[in-house]
Length: 234
Image (tube, rainbow, N blue to C red; front, side):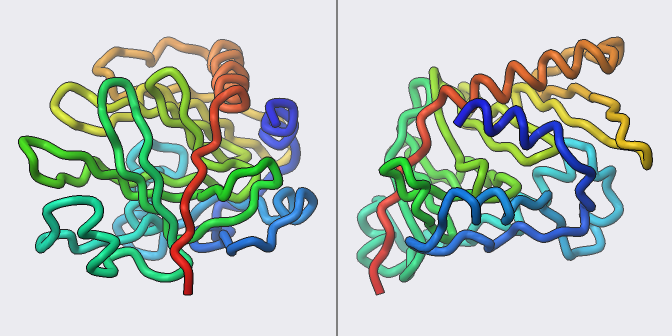
């Protein structure tokens, strides 16, 4: 899977208007279909359209649109969310550990990743805080060739043009620890960018260094474990 990430990240110029949200379908994906299905997510609302499409804020806004909105106000446990049908047919759920945090991840739809996993490209993340369910945040990838994955306390999402590495902070905040991206000009030449929500100043990172980081992040995601979601039956 790692080599496919690197290749897909570097080829072609894809329009940011292509829609990936909700593109996952249950049990029907093949390897070739995954590659053809690649798209960079977009957002429909005006707030997102006003954002820089290469920014962390844009990725977070798109994630908020793609990942499921779940009313858990009358639920005491994750099991309640299932029993009270907050997670409906075709959606998926998984229990994962991110660092020291036990996380309940819910995706809007699952697909067969052809590696033994029912994967997802978006997720709303929950945990317990003082015995109560809290929502950590929402994440998304840009298509089925980039299933959400975890490794060494991090969560990874990606598309052909960006890759994000998430961490959960001590205050149960979901943060993009690293994000690398590329923008192509009309001649197909790429300029690379790096961002983080860790509070550091990375403005002096040049395109060549950002490209190295981007390739490293794709390698990390390729070596990570794809989240295997249980699919809610009809």
